[in-house]
Length: 162
Image (cartoon, rainbow, N blue to C red):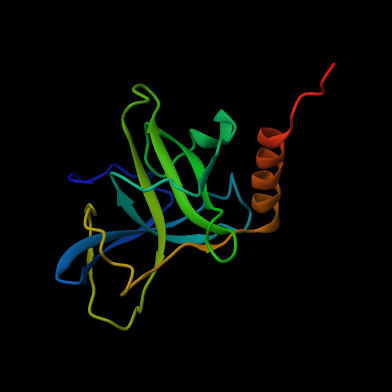
């Protein structure tokens, strides 16, 4: 993502500048809004323009939830890797509400907080040869796995022969 992203003020914790394999990336730290999740789970995300979607399921979310977005003007859907060792919640796909062809991905990342980082007020992230220095994704919760399985079951069912 080549330009700073506008963010939802009540959910943004901070933006951290990190050097990964010689590239500077910006990692957004958010919490889920209480109106969507009582747990207000924290997430560190790395926005990306592209993502290899092989083995990734894109779970749609009802509009009343998906338009309550960390990035105003974008609605989100959930990305789950089905080819990983175990089902992994990779992050989200964000799609413009007014222009569906405008989209980006936000990968859930974790990294060693002890390393040198700089907190910024604004940022963007683009470079992705970072898997060796950061971890991507988190184990998908049971409800998410159940949705993926239900989608897969629906797409593999054959109609009865008359």
